Image (cartoon, rainbow, N blue to C red; front, side, top):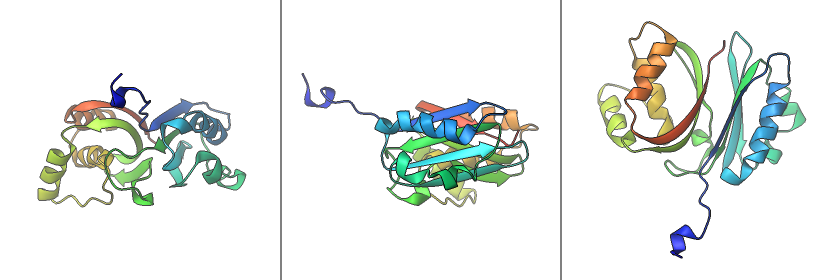
Length: 177
C-alpha cells in the first residue's frame, strides 16, 4: 500500500443543528466531541437566538474548551460548530472557526471543511478591491464575497458568494433567524 494511503487523513469537522427549545450549545458540544478526531487544533460553537449570533472558540480540545460556564453563554434555537485541522492558514486563535461577521446582509457565522482551490486568486482580487482580511484562513474569502454581494436577500448573497468558490468543501452557516 502507498504510504500516503495507509493512514486516515481527517481534516476538520463541522456540525450544525436546529433544535428550538433544546440546549443547542450542549448538543453541539457533543457533536463536536464525536468529531474531535477530525481536528484537535481548535474548536468553536456559534449559537443563534432569533436576534443575534454569539460565538465562543479557543485553541485545544473540545472537552477542554467548552466548560459548563462557557456553554451557558450560548443560547438559542440553532447552532453550528467546528473542530479544526489546518490545511490552509496558520495555527492560531485568529483562524479558529466559526468565523462571525456583521455586514449589510446581517450577521452570519460560517464553519468550513475542505479545500477552496481558488481561494488565493479570490483573496488577491478582494484585497485589490479594498477588503481587509483578519485571518489567514481560506474560509474568510467566502465571508468577504458575501459581504460585498449586492444581492437583495441574504439567501441570494449566500448563493452568489458560494457560486464563486471552486473546490471540494462542506459548509455550515448560521444567521440570527
